[in-house]
Amino acid sequence: MSSTLTLLFVNFILLCATTLASDPDPIQDYCLPNLKSSASRTAHLTIIPCKNSSEATTDDFVFSGMKVPGNFTDTGLAAISVNPTIFPGINTLGMSFVRADLKVGGINPPHFHPRATEIAYIVQGSVYSGFVDSTNRVFARVVEQGEVMVFPRGLVHFLMNVGKKPATVFGSFNSQNPGMQKIPAAIFGSGINDKLLEKAFGLSPKQIALMRRRFG
Ligand SMILES: *[C@@H]1O[C@H](CO)[C@@H](O)[C@H](O)[C@H]1NC(C)=O
Ligand SMILES: *[C@@H]1O[C@H](CO)[C@@H](O)[C@H](O)[C@H]1NC(C)=O
View 1 (tube, protein in one colour):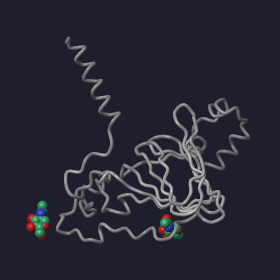
View 2: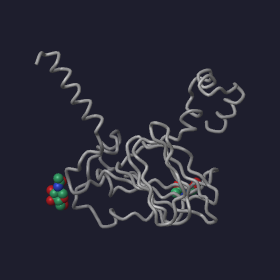
View 3: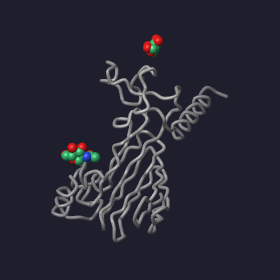
View 4: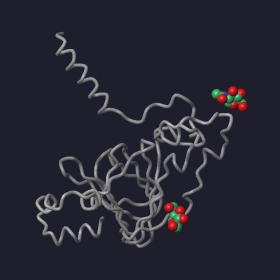
């Protein structure tokens, strides 16, 4: 191969590796973040040095912070996202989870997780749940207690409690840091130029201002 071709080939392999990237495999049984370490003050959580494993206790691997719903937002959603910041035991293990409670009629607005697929188990209630694929096809229906729905990585998804009682959903992610972008806030709450938004959505300056107040 010529050197240009070699370079292209190497770039292609690197691109594939990047596209297929997920959380790295752990290189130890577990890694409880050593928050006392000086490196931890500047490091991203995924690379905080581990505590000496002799200091680990059973309680480090048990999370008790989601026995009851969290605080409800004005859309009737209470979500407790359990990541290594509040549950150090899962650090480096490539997964995390969430407890989401929905009041009657409550919604989890359209959002997506750039770095994880989500499995959502309906612990109680009847929840209209779905996602939109990259051809804008929607896959949605009422999912009942005991059923599970999967939201593929990076795709927009949403929930609404359509039952007569509060609903509880347990979601798990195949990343310890799935990330989340709420569509309304990402568009109208992020400081994108007004003119652009007016043209993109066919809205008047007044309507844009309204959306900004709501999602800013
Ligand atoms: C971890 O702790 C044990 C027991 O206190 C000690 O023997 C060992 O040297 C420590 N390891 C490191 C890397 O500090
Ligand atoms: C709910 O709000 C209270 C008061 O602001 C706060 O102390 C508590 O940590 C919040 N709970 C959750 C799960 O975020």
